[in-house]
Structure formats: structure tokens, C-alpha cells
Amino acid sequence: MKNYVNWAILAPGRIANAMATAMNGIKNGKLPNISGDKIRLYAVASRNLERAKEFADKWHFEKAYGSYEELYNDPEVDAVYIANPHAFHLDSVLGCLKSGKHVLCEKPAGCSRDQLNKMTSLAREKNLFFMEAMWTAFNPCIREIKKEISAGTIGNIINIDSRFCNRNPYDPNDRNYDPRQAGGALLDLGIYNIYFAMMLADFSPITAESSAVRMLKGVDAWNSVNLTFENGIVTSFQDAMDVPSTTGTHDAVIYGTKGFITVENFFMATKADVHVYKNIWGSENEVIREIREPFAVNGYEYECAHATEFILTGRTESDVHTFKKSEDLIDTMDALRRDWGMKYPWE
Image 1 (cartoon, rainbow, N blue to C red):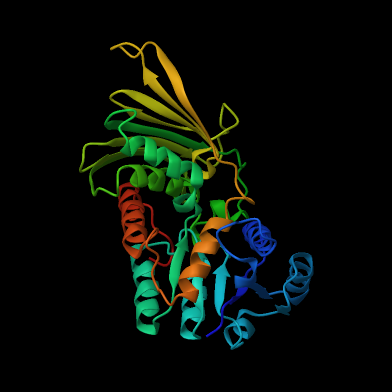
Image 2: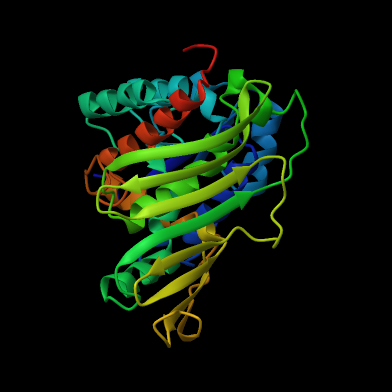
């Protein structure tokens, strides 16, 4: 049995560069809990051979393919990180699984529960590792935040507020504004707000929801959402593709009965401050802990290392970001889209 994973990357775009950076960091010993020898940078596949070659040269991959089918047919490929736009994930995931490859697929893995079910069903049938690449699930700073919450430092959680707003001016050729490519703020940005709240609410089922949305050319350009969990925690968030953050960061606040935690850039957090109230009104507070957890590389290394270890030990489903968590996440987004009357052309 091999003691390393031959990794391939499908679709060498922006997000693939981030993962390649992380993979190289692991190989160079930046992550102490995994040996760099366990990762082999094996292949890159693009619809454009020159683009694949350029990416492979830049990031030290051994092979470059000008089609996805060549990657599927290479028996030396063990696992594939899928990095194309999410509207194309289904075909890519199924293509990899059918050819016996383990899969780490960029979020959201599926654009709907139906798509996700097809992926997880085939992964189970083929006895292959499959995981949605939700890097927030493996974030060291959020792990420390959860420790503070479990310890009761801020009391019982009442509310989780977050915003994720970017200014991306309307362009009909931009995938974010194209319903045929499952565009919109929800699947690109809001997925993080929902997952962040679910992590802290221990994935308690959602029992009520309300939302406001501004549609543009068939996709949600802006949304404001309140979700209530079965355990009473409420999350309120806003996402936008065409409205900038007023602070320059994408922040969250976790409110408890004894204090609150502020989180800078919650979806890729490295900084958080734990506050406790000094009076019963909460008008005065003090910071009792500054959480500082810089990434070993860029944040993508943790999910890659996790997938590598699971593949090498023959495990097919993550115990951190499980199939059930992916299902809860996409179910929530499906429900919001139904409320908005927002459908993709193939639905």
C-alpha cells in the first residue's frame, strides 16, 4: 500500500492556485502534523493544454493534461481537487469517482441537494473518499473560538451576526451574475455565513427562516437572512456581490449571555477577541483573550492534509465535514432559493 497520495488538480484557476500554494507548503514541511512525503504533486488538467502546462510548471506538478478525460483515464491519479465553477462540479465529481479517484471538491460541492446526493451515493458505491472542500471547518482560529464557547466563557449563545459583502460591478459575462453557472451571492458568499453559524450551533436543525433579497438578472445580488435553529440560536447575515464592506473586512459577532466574541474575516479567521460584560446591561466589557492563529500557509492546507490522511488510512467520509453537514448546508440554501423563487435553468 502506498504511503503517499498522487494529487491532481482539475481546472487551474484562481482557487486552484490557492490550493497549489497549500500543497507546496505541506510538501515543504510547513504543517507539523503531516509529513510532506505524503503528498505528491502529480497532475493538472485543463480544457486548455497550455494553461495546464503553465500551472504545472509554476507549482511543480509532474504532468499536464489538455482535457479532463485524460486525467480521469490516468491510473496513477489517486485524488483530485476539483476547482472549476460550481455549476460544473456534478459532471467533474462523477467523472472522477467513476474512474476510481478520490475527490476533494470546492464548495459548494453541489448546486442542490439532488446534485449532492448523486455525488455521495456514487462515492459510497465506489468506496471512495469524497468531501466538500469547506476550509472553514478546519480553521484553527474557529477551533479556539469553539473551545471558549464550550467552556461557557460568554455564556449561552443567543445570536450570531455576520456580513460578507464584496463590490463586484455587474458584468453579464461574469459567472457570478450568470444563472446558467449558478451565480448569485448565496452559493458564493452566503454559504460561509450559514456554515459558520451551523458550526457554532452544533448543526442544530433550522426550524424557521425569513429573508429579503434583491435579484439582478436572475440571481441574488444581495440578501439579508435570519435563521432560527432548533436550540434557539438565531443567526442574522447579509451578503452582497455589488455592495462593498464598509469596514474593509468581513466580520462576525457571536453574542452570548455573558459576553461576545468578535471575529475578523470570519470565513478565513485568524483573529478573534473574547469579550465579557462588566455590568448587567452590557454597556461595559473587557477583552479577556485575544485569539491569534495565523495560517501555516494560507488556510487551505488543513483540509488538504485532512483529506490526505483519510485517503491513506482507507476512510471514505470525513469526521469533521461529514456528508450530513454538507446536506444540512445545501438544504438550507435550497430552502432560501425556493422562498425567493430563484431557480437555475436546468431545474
